[in-house]
Length: 411
Ligand code: BGC
Image 1 (spheres, rainbow, N blue to C red):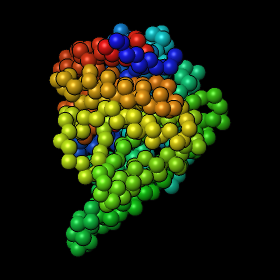
Image 2 (image 1 turned 180 degrees about the vertical axis):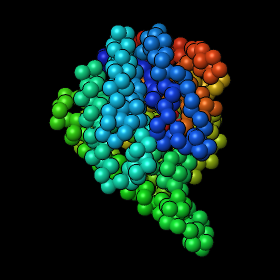
Image 3 (image 1 turned 90 degrees about the horizontal axis):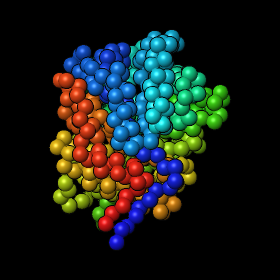
């Protein structure tokens, strides 16, 4: 017997990308500078999506997508403080028109990780006035693109920016919280600046940055709404479901991890969200003895647990869209299963009362996976980085059937 898992009418299906990861030719931001310094891999032309977006949207259309999430590049739009580049706006207007011509609904992310150099070099989100600077930029983007797009997310994954940039030190601005380093730095009497790169200081800065990011979103929300009250403004949140076994210490760890990773930021911002974007990748259980299958990122293969993350967000009583969920799988041996299982997880959450409106697979194309360069392949479409040839992966066909059927039909 056929078991139908239909999604609500008007549900949007598609995929996501982000400017720096796919466009190519971006040279004026903190990541391109870090690459020049040899601290992260070079991004170069990436997928040359900047010039090939028509071809890429043809593929998205042929795959049954009805929505597409992408980000605009801050360093292109505001290359110097307060100076806006009209040609960048014109480019993104063309991108939006290209989506409309194919009847694909756009979702714009105004800021996806990369900062223009003038901002990062003057302190970025450590700056006291960063919320106002960010809000001004967001309001400008919506004022220039809002006639072609109704759904804007101010920022992507604030916690990932904070933890990789100020706790792990693996992303710009490469500050690392480390007690041992702090001792050796203090002993050798190094300057404040080196202390800020390692030691205890990054922890304080992390909390400051996280507070500024929440304020930046809230201020941007208000600035956007003043001029464009009908625009849907969201935040895109990376959510991990931290679980534990029976052990009370592990239970406490899971409670704190959920609070600091998800609830703290959402509690600060949900009043200024018309909707929430969920980015889901994996699940973690403290005290877990199970041996999990691993993706190419070495993350637990746990697509169905998207259900738990959607339930976690239910308390904010906002419409939710899955803004990213996907798997790095160069051989394309687990992607189809991943997609099906997380679609089932999403469907179950809807049955349990979560208001989910759309689903964006990460990613449409293989792309620049940040500090890991081009080694990880998340795409429905494979990119040959020598020739830039696009090849649709078999798993994209499985997703296409889901998009066309508005759900899963299993036997
Ligand atoms: C980010 C993407 C990234 C993906 C896979 C998300 O955290 O928004 O930019 O490529 O995860 O790591």
